[in-house]
Image (cartoon, helix red, strand yellow):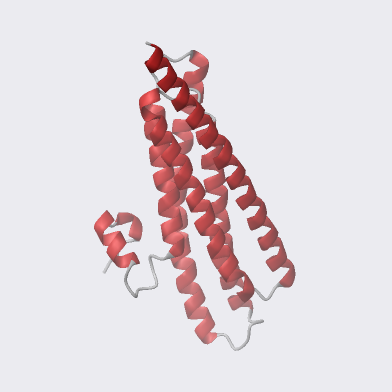
Length: 214
């Protein structure tokens, strides 16, 4: 019997299952969902911003729309990969005779690599969302800002998953590399979020001022 992946569940079903004692969907799936919502909000803002824009602005918007579609597909892939990786880790850890078991080392690394990939996706989304702030129409600027917030939340959530799984990695060099990579991505996400939200707020304030003067 085919078991639905969390991606195929209704919002109600996802929330209920995530809040249950079941192992999945858990933090990884929630991070992927947050990034997918970020892509949805950014895509909507882009699609509603085509009118009365310069050709250069429309090019930025078109690029963002394509990017958001790719990001949404990546989120679905990574949600499934996270669930498979956790299931593999549980199965292997029950059979492994020591922490040096190759299959266990591999399984642990996957529980770190998947959320790291998700962090990269979130950073990619933040970079793209920031790129269309000036071209976004005034009535969907708040939606673009929400997209930015969701992307950063996805990166931060995935960062926590990486950090809690790192101690189980017996490969010291890999563990250090994973940790450094996660720290860099988190710092980049924080900076991009700050820049993007500042640009969104400036655009909103500019629009409010223009309305008050008209």
